Each structure stands twice: as structure tokens, then as C-alpha cells.
Image 1 (tube, helix red, strand yellow):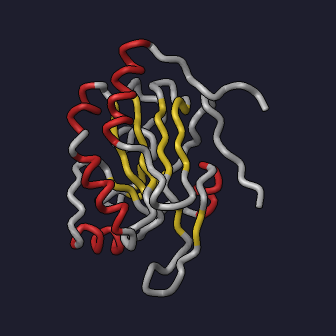
Image 2 (image 1 turned 135 degrees about the vertical axis):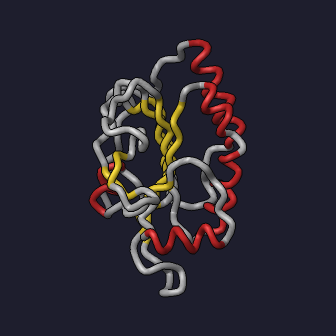
Length: 181
């Protein structure tokens, strides 16, 4: 199975998803209309409403929102869920204040280089879904940090991530992982 990944330093693709009001917005800086808005973006891709680990991770992410805001990083989370499935996740206790986007397509998952899983059974979900991913995009729309997992148990520790971002920003840390293959 061949899987193409985004390269560190390359432009993040323009992807439109649906926000909680039903409006199509750009995945990068979901509050804005352009991909490069002069602010940083942290995008978290989660598996979907069926994943209790995702629910816990996203709710924990909310505790870091003020530190991310202090770094002028806009946070968005996205999945392949439908708006109805997102509502089910909220009923299960999802409590985050950042934009939650739905409708990630197979083509978009592949464009991002995400691992894609099929449901194990009908009670899990009714569509293929992405495994976890994390993307940090700079104000010029370039992908600066990337983390892609093939299972729900492999995700960046949020304290280490945010502390690392604080360090990186204070030291003007360069893009890593750019050595050509």
C-alpha cells in the first residue's frame, strides 16, 4: 500500500469542511476565508464520534487552549463524521470551544497522507475514517510540524506538544525533517 505524505515546509492544501453552523470553511484558520491569514494554525484530525480515546484527547486539548492562544495559534479539529455524528459526540461529553469541522472525504484524507481505517462493524461507524493526525501551519500556509498515526493510541502528549511549541516559538526553531529522500 503506497501512502503519500505531506512534506515539512510545503504548502498545506486547501481543504474545505463544514463547521457547526453548516457553513463550508477552510480547514486552515477555520474562522477565516483564506489559507494564509497571518496567524498560525494547529489542526487536529480525530477518528470520529465512535472513538472514546478521541473524546478524552479533545477534551484534554481544551485545557491548553489559552496557552495556544497566547502563541497566536488558531486551533481546529476535524473528522469524517457527519454533523449528526458530531452531535452524538457532544452528547457523550465533548466540550471544546475551538471550531469542530465535519465531512473530511477520502480524497482529502489521502491528500493529507492520513492513515484510513474501515469500521470493524456497523456499530462502530458507517464510513471509512481517518486515524489521528496533527498539523502545525505557519502564517504563510506552510506545513511546519506533522504527526500522523495509524492507531488511536499513538498521539502527541499535549503538555509536551504545547511546551515544545512555546520553546520553538521563543527560539525561532527551524522546520525539521526536510532532508530530501
